[in-house]
Image 1: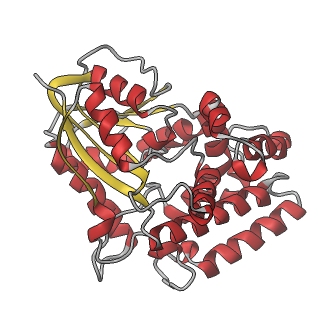
Image 2 (image 1 turned 180 degrees about the horizontal axis):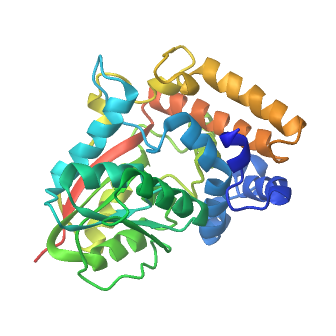
Length: 336
């Protein structure tokens, strides 16, 4: 019932179907193109998260990201370790001011704040996610040290040299221009301090002339609210162009003992992450269909479930073929 009542986020329930139709029209399967998505990225990404956030929270919990995973480790454990690794790489110290760029509902923000005893600001341009994040901060008892700011990460409302560390977890992939986004992060970061991120990227194995590769890329874009998916090399170039010194970078998916896409793989079954499995997603899809039919969920909810399922298939195919990674990691420093 929580899933049904929160579907659509801040969108009026009577307008959800119209929002779904407009969102779909941005994407290649519905006649859209990259230029239009980039020009209207704020509207597209906001619609996406209004429509998809309740599904994410229902399936993933509070942290909407993948993780490098060890054998014998649960998905939840790997997600926390993935966040701790980021904090350790940044060397976050107690009391420091940290910025989470594209923070979602704040799962990583709360985990990193508690892990490092730091004060984390979450930057997000989606009103529904911020409202939900504030409530979760209050319940977790971090509302006095952690906060949210509603703004576009291409135009941050912070002064220069303001933060001791900045990170982004599978979020800046929504930016229409990597250089513009990284340049803003560079501006608000204190000299001598670091920026770390996990980026969604196409790898060097991606062939733009391969129709199947383009289909997989398109499935991920529509199912995850992306204007485009950059190559790892393009992210690296944009970082250096923005002024950062790259300390190290690597596609962490390559060394993951358990494939990062396993929770979504139709051949995999897990009780601990049941809602993400093929059986769990099938049950959710049919539950949403029934809830929409009896008008407990808004019209259009099933369409959202469908493009999220399309994303799952694209992510698994992209992972298997090693043409896509959700964890191209880099640690970069702003010079003194």
